[in-house]
Figure (tube, rainbow, N blue to C red):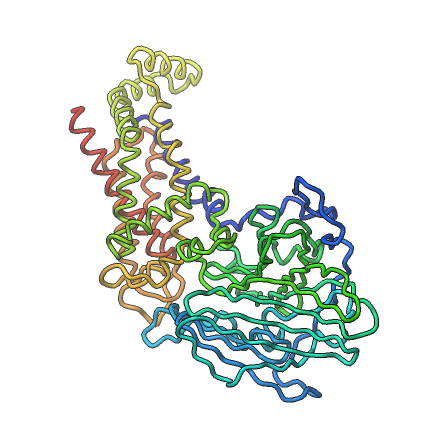
Length: 557
């Protein structure tokens, strides 16, 4: 194989692991109008004046809320358990102060508790999730209201059917606010009706905001470099994320809202209007808390009248299989960025294989084989081209030696050699370029899919979303993040890269040969902290590629 071919392979691998890294680990692109003040509008038909909220003055950013409120009457926290989750809703603000997911654990360690999606720390800082307020303060006292609930008990078990809990509060002006939550035993979705009854003697013309806060400290900021964590929305038929560091420059977005929420690598908290509507997102970032608010305009409420706004709440996994069961836009939160159009079908295919053979490690192997079969003709063409280049390698070496002091003449003779033997040095490169988008898409999907979280494979690999480790150590190892141990699968992957190098002809340029021999070491170090599912894919891909290369060379020999 000539030096140009080797140089391309070196560059291609570098692109895969360096430039490609930015694609499959970069957060989802920010909204196009992030630095513009004009609201997003994509509706074909005009929006009624009553639905516009661009002139709403959002409420001030709330200060941290201590755990015990001084001056408030006693209030209860209603705890409701379903097969899917256990939720705590406080009568203070009628907000969610805890949520534990029964089917997910904090870690993969034995005895690990269930995953807490809403933590006490976050509840103490914010007062809870899905608290409500008015943007202009026309319902006095609502921001810190203590509601009364109609729950018969503080502890409720819901194993079938559904359960309504109504939280009611009346302010000194005679305005009553009711928040009716409907829980279902067989769903993560919670329906929310907000009813406002105007018992005062003046009209109420305001907007209701529902808050979805998330904890965003330095640790979360570092994690977000690899998989976005922060405020997100389905806005104007597009999945949109907002980097918390940009909130200071722009904190308001308007458009047709499908849902508003806070997303992490694996989980989502969101509020959805029952019908997509033109509304506003209002964001704030203070005290390590990012708050994303859905602001919905209420129709003018005259005395002795009532209005109702209806929403659906979601707190759960970003599972494409689960979210696809719901007739809404939540499944758009399972987004793989630039390569989403390719990664989503790959995820569906992996889940399909898992439904037949319930082991995600096996599903990754079979999916990798399937992809390699699709691109088998292109791979064969590439290896044939490499074999043709191998035949002219001795002649090329003679030309390089003969004209080493005349670069122009050397290049002319090499091109003449290509023409004589009808060899195209680029013909082996094109098949690799065609496969790169699939590579990046699969890579991104395997990193983000919650299906791999705590999913076992075989032997020591008990979590395909975590790094490959055997025999954990108490001491650190260079280039390795905790937990420390022997990265057996990663070392096997590195060995497969080395074997691939051995199967190809040595480069004429000693410097290029050294670069190519260092590539297996570079790849091993790079993958040492990557999820085992990604390492498994790369290892299987290398083994199949070596087999195809050996088979092709044997036929052409």
